[in-house]
Image (cartoon, rainbow, N blue to C red; front, top):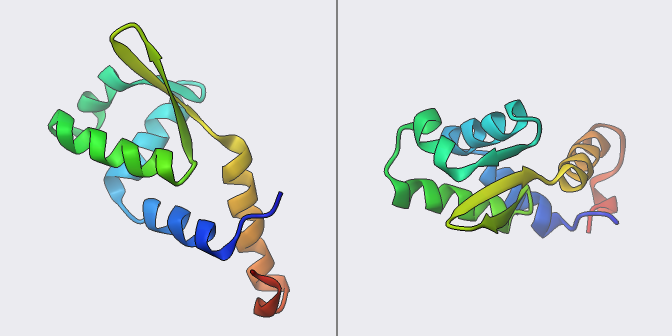
Length: 100
């Protein structure tokens, strides 16, 4: 599956915030699966702000959330990340008309 230009734009916007990058680094550092409760210590924001950033990452398809009791855990969506990186690499080697 190839990402559409709209999906690439959404992912790029999601990655354009340092707090969201910190969240991704936190999850990656936990072996690709991190708990929501640990995010406060990582980015030091109030819970509503953390939820906002997590929602953007989920909507971009970069992470997937799963409820476990009262807690949420998040996993990296490596498939989407790899497709995004592939799309970026294509920018340096192909005509931009190839992108949809």
